[in-house]
Length: 182
Image (cartoon, rainbow, N blue to C red; front, side, top):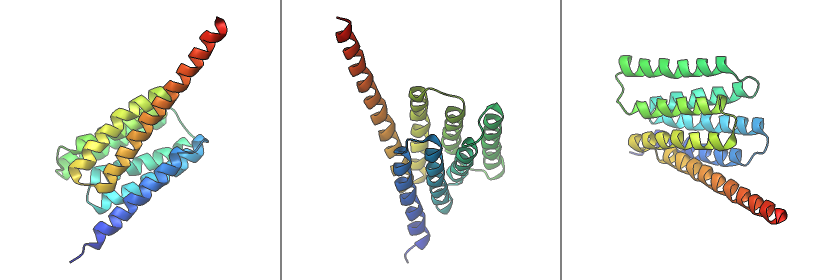
């Protein structure tokens, strides 16, 4: 018997990957946040459908965080989302008896929250997100999420590519500056 729930879950995962790809190409930060929120909503649905509750909750919180961050940022937002992550972690750990692997999902979510709200340097945010995406990748592999894994891997590739591209651009500028000074 074919499991249509898995097919639907993977369709949401695929939609998340496509939306995220589109989101990363946006130049306007709020447009990026909005499209990224749609991707997070899709991947959250994917995780709930495959019973990966921690990732479903974390991505739903990230979706809400992106929408709120379009208008509001600050320490209160940071505290709220960290508290929400910790509250859901405690609920899942103590009341639902979830496996230790939820530590990866909630740690990833907290790192993304701190990076999104507190950090202001694009380079530092990308470096911070490498750790967050890596933790998310470990979780998605452990729960067997095909498109969750693709989602994390494509995000990591995008981050590494952007860091590489920016470093090369800076090196060219530095070289041009040195040549002008001579």
